[in-house]
Length: 155
Image (cartoon, rainbow, N blue to C red; front, side):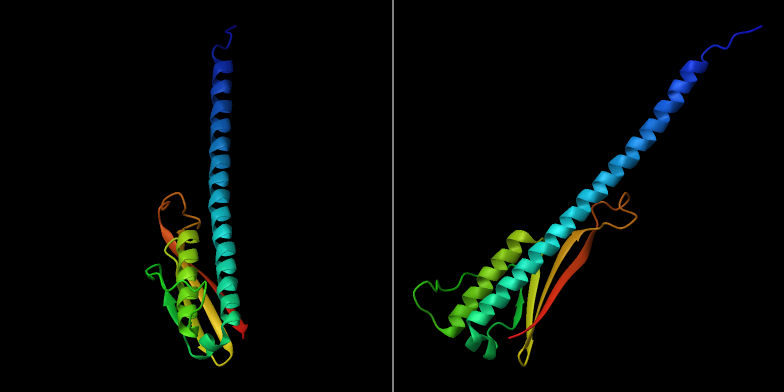
């Protein structure tokens, strides 16, 4: 009668292979979780930025009525007057937009903020780019997708 030789070694190799596949799955799940966490943080920062500009607009109703806040900012605004002592309604709106632009630029990748007004209804839209988190994340890890946040308020 012949004895089996190497059967234990094959069993160990198979169990190591199963363990390796399981660990790869765990690593992929962790990577997806980190990417989704980043997206949630970006949405949170967009909501805070939208709320901030709405509050600034509430503090300057004349600037809103004149349309000083209407338009788009996209990280290219230049510094305006420092309104710590006194400034006009238009200068205050320009300063608010500059500071809002800086908040967007520092917290969201490739951010663009748009403010539009229809009567007393103001729509604040923030667009930015974030990493693609779809099912094919393994093949397009560096792909970016558009993300957007919109807030509609009545002033």
